[in-house]
Image 1 (cartoon, rainbow, N blue to C red):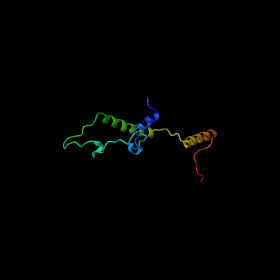
Image 2 (cartoon, rainbow, N blue to C red; image 1 turned 135 degrees about the vertical axis):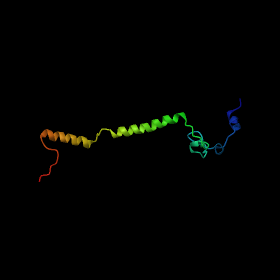
Image 3 (tube, rainbow, N blue to C red; image 1 turned 60 degrees about the horizontal axis):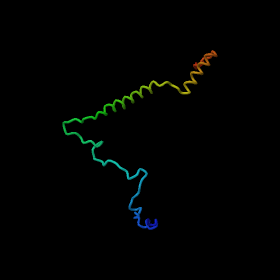
Image 4 (cartoon, helix red, strand yellow; image 1 turned 90 degrees about the vertical axis):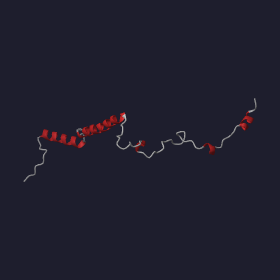
Length: 107
């Protein structure tokens, strides 16, 4: 077996400049080349309709249905602000003491 120093001399060293730079994602960024078409879809021929994919209707129902549901839930959301609670509590305490809680100007 030859000595290790002679083996190291025989190894081919590649300069770092030639190998290029390695990124944390293990290479340069990868992407699809732009085709110039909206969403990469060619428009249909004149007189023909676009054929929907099977997931599109589910996406529309889910997306806009959840928006409508969120709007309804936000509209009927209970008022839990501290001001509302304090006003209700003050009215109850004033009624318990026999005081009026509505302002009536004296003439």
